[in-house]
Image 1 (cartoon, rainbow, N blue to C red):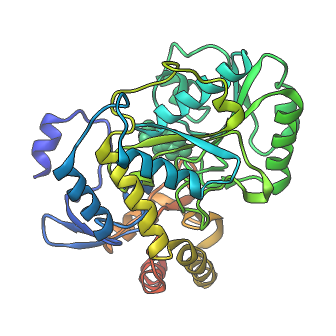
Image 2 (image 1 turned 180 degrees about the horizontal axis):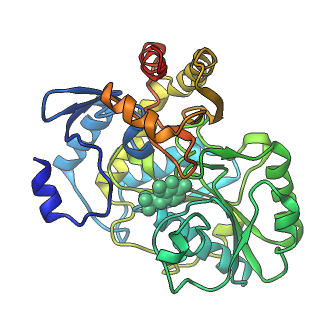
Length: 381
Ligand SMILES: Cc1ncc(COP(=O)(O)O)c(C=O)c1O
């Protein structure tokens, strides 16, 4: 089972010793017939849960009608997805651009910032992760990533997350855009105070800089709202999305304001697969499923319950993040907790902070699942 994969696939990932064969809601079933509670959601992708029936049916139906045609033709599937996505976004984000992944969404967002301003530099933050293609990895001041992307794209500047003075010192009239993960996930689920986001908005307005939220993880309901954009009354000029947007069908997107859209002309951006019918059917069905099952309310309620239950667990030092993007800080090493939980058939994630265990569960997780997790987490339990 696993041997074949190790033999024929590059060893670029440290894998958990399980083979996922089937999924349903918050559960993953392995080839050996075991059932795992998935609090990692396939790296934040399974927002609607695994194989949500509404999404599966929409994909099946679309697959029987038309798998793909490019953006050179109109498509009702694409029209529906774009309209639905814009309808749930803050009202100033009026246009969508579809691509295939998070890194590609970020590349296009930075390119749009440069087109809109006629400037080149981009400010991002230490601890932020934005992807592995050339421009996005050059914007990723986290661990070894920038090094892996050498030679880096020039014009990337690093500011300190949460420190507006550090941004102010860099944000001169050569800077096109400021891009941030509003909640830094990989860095250990770090948030800044509301004043930081508001000050960024003001700074960008004053200096003619495009503000980009990388919502590849925080978007599509994960925080208990559709997007982080709008939180603390701050709406960026561009939002990038991927991961949960297609429930597992690869798709990325940028949402932009009219002001940005006015600078983008025919042929300025593009990708063959962006806006393909299968992906578009998955997007519409994903957003409908979140709405129909009232998952945003569920996230807010279950987050509060999880936080209250974790107060009982002695080994837990703090809980960071928002909604279902949570970083649980332990007194011990989180890798040991991750391993112990896996033995107890619960999948979680680690982060670049050795003390922080990450949870990115499906948005349909309930109190009952939280009880199982808390029981299994308690080393004394
Ligand atoms: C915040 C953030 N941005 C961008 C990316 C890159 O997305 P993708 O792997 O789809 O290229 C990721 C992936 O983990 C991410 O977490």
